[in-house]
Length: 291
Image (cartoon, rainbow, N blue to C red; front, side, top):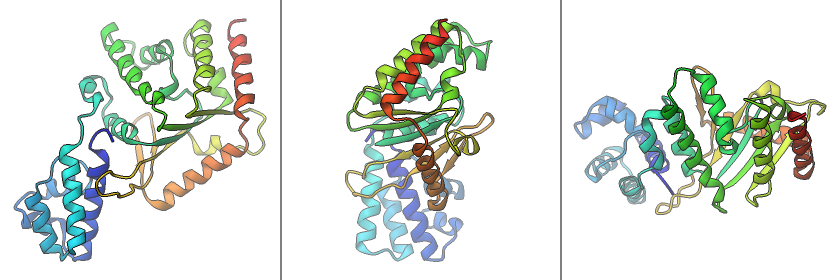
């Protein structure tokens, strides 16, 4: 597992559960270890990189935790302290505010289910396609600023070479037909899409315009991230739904909300073309872009 996102989330969630079970406020729990309520909030929200064992033991006593609960919390704190540094931190200046949290989740995920209604997901974009989007997003960026952003996208795509990482992509047909850049850019992008669709761990399927009762346009684009067990504690982190917005992103973790998006993905999948039919359509649209 890369990065500290998963153990941090698990530790924060369990501390919150034990604190609430003990009937303590965040302020009271912060006082137990002589820290601030703000720091306590960061720990419970899974945003703090290191939590001392001394604090874990003090909270375990204050919350009335069992010996097994204490060992689990200490194990998570150890995993958090020894987690690897994420590659994307080197690109921090080029990553949009808040997107670093998504990258840490993506880096730790074992599988992604993506529904894209308008543009290709970043993990599938060619450099030329991504470059056109960058110039559209902010024409004032310098060449070096844009190329650094391309570097982020290139590093992300290395996950596709990991056979343990699975990706199920559902695309609206409009994604294929919305021209980003020149016809040559689109031809290159769609050719690359057919190549990626042949990877054993990647499934790409298109929902055609004539699909019956498509729910995709009503839901909007989203990504469901699922995670492996944490290695030491064997805890299973629940899935997260990521919804990217123009002025802000959403991270949904409540079971009922996640289930709604999982149901939507299943419904979209039922009206999507088969992978072989999708490849035929992608090749056909690629030729249309060059005519």
